[in-house]
Length: 316
Image (cartoon, rainbow, N blue to C red; front, side, top):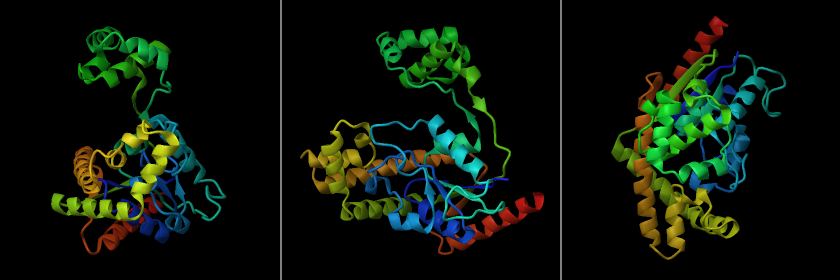
């Protein structure tokens, strides 16, 4: 049976490094749960594992989409499930790794919705974005759209804020394409395999310092050159270039701010993003938390991983 170990938490808490060390000890693989690392060429700004790190341990769902494509949560969930399903079939899903039935798989990242889609078994309506329909609905205005939603799906309307245009549009889109309310199509179907969730965290001061150091390292490693290249290749209006880090460096390249200002803004915006991540993950009481600043963090987590593996292997 599949055994899944999740390593989650806010950005810059050291999730990738810890997961790499754990996966090496287990002779396992790592599945990324990062909504930007799935895109090719977005490397430095997404803190993507290096090529040498990926050679040490096989990584999945990194560099699987072009920057002009979109990886939906439903797409992600389906791809992860395929990997998990194939891990119990020999040969293993990667030619360099021979997974035994008791080897856990590591799911690592900070995209909460990606992780929730797996550990909770979220039911996600398979309805692709409908550009024409969305345009027609958008022209009506949020007030009328929300009133429409209250008529066709009162349950969903109670969960969606009257001013939340994005979720209102999505709910109406699903209804008009499928003929069923989105509230009836959603829900959860938790997996039957054992899951251990490890969370990494530290106090705000330490986290801010970690974010600042990582931002400085990114710039030294060529982040500015990466953003410049991506702007030239895909155009400055590419949506991914408006995400954390990239949008600040893009402003610097446009001459609107200095490089120091770009770095300061990146640290500020990353810290605010990390705060939202912490709030998200803290809602899940099944996550077991560890201090990322602890000098013996790896051994602490490794002990818990071993306990998890022994307990689940006995049940098998």
